[in-house]
Image 1 (spheres, rainbow, N blue to C red):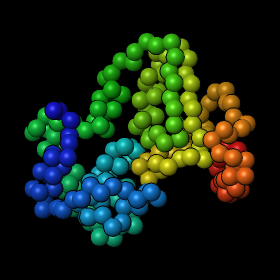
Image 2: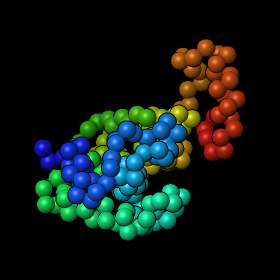
Image 3: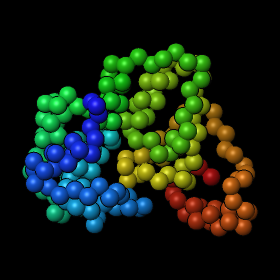
Length: 192
């Protein structure tokens, strides 16, 4: 009951006179076609997930009908609402762990789908790794699908340590794999 939910965001948007649909983000990460309220909430949330100042993120976007004063008002209203109602969201939860949490002692930390971690999630992994005896990170930079949400496969590519690239795919027939390899070979920064 302390986590922000749909009703909380509806209350905030109602207070601001914003329409929201929560229909989601397109497969390619585009947020066009959604309501202005959806886009404002997305940008506000994204800035915190990727650790970029709200103004800097806003300036880097080409969304022409999002004005700075509107975005700032949404940001301040969300913060005030959370404070007044003793609420937090997922990003707040991650930040609390990073800032004051203690990583459990564990013999092995396994991180999967690492290509889709946002910068704040990488900080959580770093924190958890502090008390882990061994750390295994699995991911496929060719399968990064959450770049629109702040994931950066470059962090996986540049991760130090021993690397094992699996030589064979059991997921698709060789003919399909050949076509896929031809397509992904056009990606500039990747691990073959």
